[in-house]
Length: 368
Image 1 (spheres, one colour):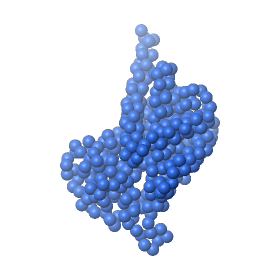
Image 2: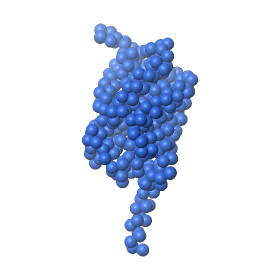
Image 3: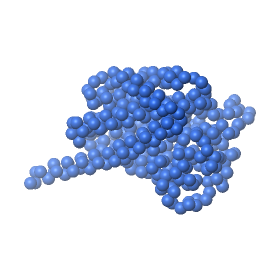
Image 4: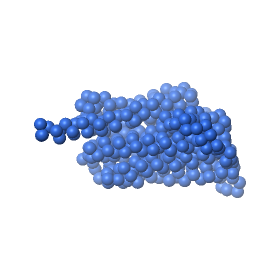
């Protein structure tokens, strides 16, 4: 049984999902999407990828509804069998540990490159890792309350700094509409979909919702908010930097924010302020992944979750230190995204089909 303190409100669930999806993606999406699409119509690709993610999210909710008092870690064995369920549990645990390593290394990379140049990686990692331990030991509710603080700050500041760049915006850079047809837009769906990985968190936190009848609403809003933020970001970044300008930058969103000044304000340049706030966003993605990984180990082995919060730290540190440079970090992100497409894009649907088949068999038995 869940403690009352472990329950989440619908807005908290939406915020956890949104924070997890945003992560590092908003800093790199304009470049990664353009590398595939090659046209300014990537906002259409984002819409299509968002709708696909919503459809898969609703399948996840439908699957959860069959086991209202259990998370995926607990009901996987009931659908697939004890040992197969444990195998998939460990696959998801490994997936979340990889996400931890990716976000932690991305956080270090952005911090050391733009803010604390020359600072050793371990010195940046350690405070964030121990802060994550503090929150994860406390449980899902303290995490949700911290996310409620981070979310409005990051969204308001993101919109503020992007809208202040409108003086650099050139409409011609986002024209013509579908100038190369629809095929380039469709070609970029897979790459863009990687930026929406994170809604799979509903497989594991849906059980914590106070009002599970609003789970569908939560998943739609949890994915819909990043869709809107992504569209605004890519349109303004491409409109200010042009396609060639975006493709030539590793972090195009940060480049845009660094390219203008507003005189007469307390802050004339907003890049450092934006980065400090967005580091909190990356930490949020790291933290919830840390919690879900430790939760999975606890549910699968029937041990104390708090123990695994500590046990997973060395693993996360090793994963975060494996990439040697920026390209390696992005390759790790692509690898994690490809795993997500297999685990989240296919598995929930298959499990739901298996459940339906079992249900049909069960109903047919009395009449035979």
